[in-house]
Image (cartoon, rainbow, N blue to C red; front, top):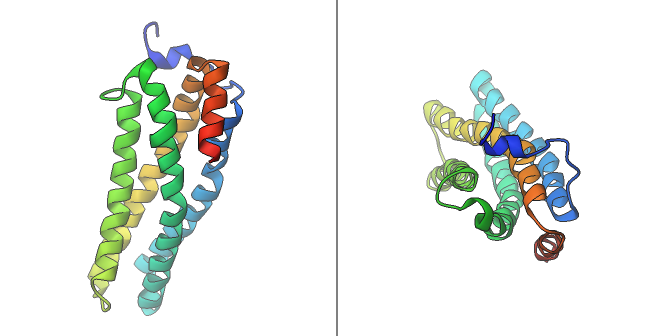
Length: 173
């Protein structure tokens, strides 16, 4: 489709070092997300272990968020900032990416706030809180795919060699 940004990129493009680093950070995060989803599903299915599984979910969510936060900061603070001169930030791909970051962090933050404000939960509350993590899961799985298939190839095609080196240097700090 002529005029569409996605038509400007080759999804099989070889990524420069900085973009490849960001992409390489996705599989471990996706693995952690898969574990979170599995625990959420166990909470939904098995009433007898629900409280134990919910406590496990709290710990796994904290560990996941600890890994997610620096990754999203590198994307927002470096990659998105560098891309905005090419595609803007108020609308379009960067706005969508930032919205999805905020949305996923909001689900996780709501979960952690609820988890820390109460130590005894009803079955209904545990299920509702686990649902927040499932929403974060679906948001982030889709989000990572968009970055890998659209945003990263777009950046690879836009950036000069100097900008690619700058990206690598800045995200390696």
